[in-house]
Length: 292
Image 1 (spheres, rainbow, N blue to C red):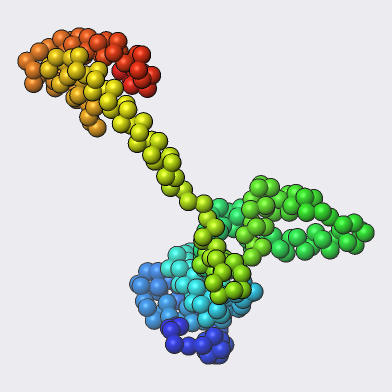
Image 2 (cartoon, rainbow, N blue to C red):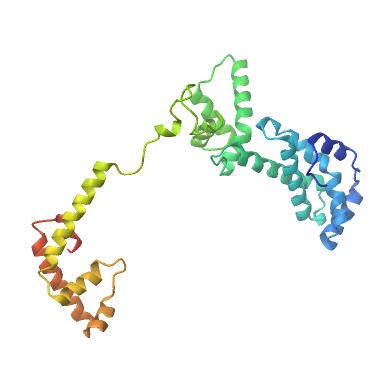
């Protein structure tokens, strides 16, 4: 059944006029679709149970999604069920389709509830759709006993009832407490009021931190250049390639270039580092440890 261009009322009327399938006809259509990929059989199967999809979609209207969108998602779930249904299992198609329809609607509701991802785990999904109902029942039962539950007791009881961790209950309570707000909304009713985004802390380094860091880097660079002046040309080359490149070269590659063995390059490197440590140990602990 094509859903585009129809209101939820017209879709409901069309679904109510659809044929009712007996078990034998339903089984025959399911086999025809599975074995022969008969699109006409699929269409009859989907159309016949569209009333079931619409009925289930109506149960989720309280979450604020447009009814027509809910019906669209229910229809997608119904088509997934038809594609995966195995008539050999001896189960009625309507029984099998209920799970797929519900899952499709729930995924849509949760995707559109908030810009912040909600219900990324099974326990959070269960809380999203059941917490308010369970909370209301627990409060009614407590009231009938003449008791009053505080928030802490209520959260623990909900976690036990639904079978989820307490921190998930606390997180979902905050998610359900209100809708999303724009950071560009003003903090007051005045036209020139400051926007909420202006109150966010700037994660970038402050000017004083940048100046201090740049000064430290310049100082360390000066000490390093001074220490390397005590090395001969070959030692400076080895230190540069081994310590001052983004990708340090291996002893073997340097030996091939210099015509030396890998062990000889290692000895020259160790001797160069020892010279630099003597120069740096009284000036910069950071650079000294780098060459230690």
